[in-house]
Image (cartoon, rainbow, N blue to C red; front, top):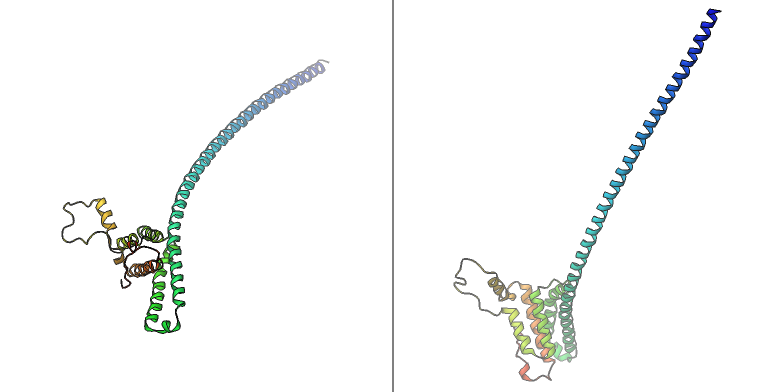
Length: 253
């Protein structure tokens, strides 16, 4: 009996110990799970904060890029508008020069076609026809420069001024501007031209303005000479003008 009682007591103790152990293990597991859950929540919150912070940085960078892009486009549009205005101004003068030349060449050709056959076949008639063909050929480079907006600004302004004076019927002023383009408004320098050791910018601009443009190259010399012949032909088409507004423009130069 005593042995049996001891056994029962031992079994009871084992059960108590086992239940206590299970209870302790359960509590420990609960604590560990709570700790793990807390750590997990903390990590997730930190990740969320990092993601939010990164998104804010990206959004700020995007705003800066957009602002920079808009500003750049605005500056580019202003530059483009200024350049387009400049091109339009250039186009007006180039179109004026080109249309004036084409119109006078056409009128000259029409006038020669109206001659009698005997005059056309004469020596003088053939010379007149060759002169027109030569002018048309020599003026082609000028017309191409006008079409491409590549004509030198000084030459372009000068020719446009000549045409304006010619259209106004003042061929004396037109001829004076032609001389200014062809040979300049100052004599060629002889001897010492500067007493200082430094060349001033103003002097360079004056010398550049006074240079004989027709001497720059053969192409300019030819189309300026042909332009002068057109100027004389335009003057011959205006018998209504008084002699005070006309000039004797030769065709040999």
